[in-house]
Image (spheres, rainbow over the protein chains, first blue to last red):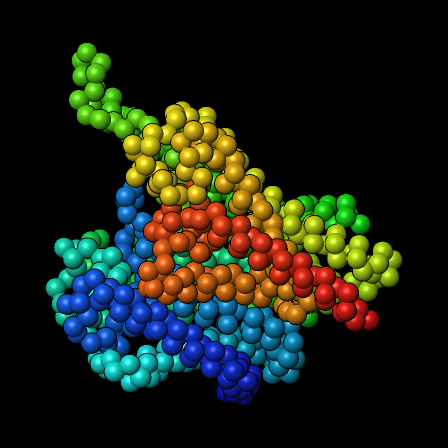
Length: 282
Length: 286
């Protein structure tokens, strides 16, 4: 039964939204293009900064890296990572409505006919996981195609120009080369947990409010560096692989995310089992 | 009709929710600013004041002023968070109402009884007022709280780097001569922007049926606009174009221009009025 529900979710929640993935591909191209132009701009004043070619690692870290630790510096503006916020808020927005709409539409009938609320909930969690994975796969595809287009290198090395662009303090950085794969995986896992949290909250409060809470977690994570504000775990720039200034342990990050994931799953299961689905409406 | 819609907008749960969030952030910002200044004064008292009452370091007294510590002049986390939530807070109270009434069929009933013009005009005004108030009230509360604890010292142009208001900044002369008026102008600009933003989101109710999308999608587009402004900066154009930054009372990386503020507000206002007028006249209600 679970497989049938999952097939339905994949068909209606992913395949029928192919047009959305095309838009996301273009959006990620725009992000890479902005990075490319900022690099060219930096090269005008300091040509030696752009002697090394742009890499896929630069593009991924630029989009997903987040920001350094927030310190109130009265003469230096905090570099608000708007691209990082956009990337996460877009996936949060695109995964906001489907579970709620499904529950007040076809999902209600599916639950009644299948007799299994648990299968419905598990299917939604798996659908969300697939959705997040596809999203980041499109990002990777976009970065790779952009790299081919502009002649960038297809590796995960990070160049010095990006460190200056992100206003990182060289003295607080781990010596290069960096392993950014694990922090990026932690980012993806954290975003999945955030989306699951949003999905769970949308069963208790309105979807708009759950999105607002997700945004609030992200914004306050920028300013307060604590692994318990899970937005911090979605910022590779704050992990121990990259910074030495109050680094966030990647192991702890994974444990926290996994724990949250399990807690959200269990609470969701209990909620879905007890929820009155017949009066659920938009 | 106008009175009814305004009452609905201001007494609804959404308005109260947005207002509570706004006030909570404003109070947190005030507490953060006040505690920072108290800490600063403590340092002065303990380490910088000599036995004869003179100071052994320049304390930059003019920097410790209400006009830099209120939410629109401070660069604390809560101040920045308020301005990043501003478009969401403005739209939450009433922007979803048109889409909701179109879906429920209430619009048909209302238009039959009071006419199209009155209906859409009332909606527009109610959304504007609710959006403006949900932003203005927290700003004013924050200003009053900070004013109760931090003196309103006249800003010193010699310390401009600490206020982030320079010679070329928007209304800089006003800031250094009549700072209270400057802050009131900033609050007024924020209110007007928030009001028109809420009305713009309301007008999208003609096209978008989903209530959450009406509020979230324009917000995401605004973030995208800020991101694209970074591309513009790459072409050496250093005027602030993003509302998240030009609504504050100080500059971040780029110069704030009055023309940009005025143009942005006018564009949002004209688009929202145009959509409401054109679709309001031509939309098939039945």
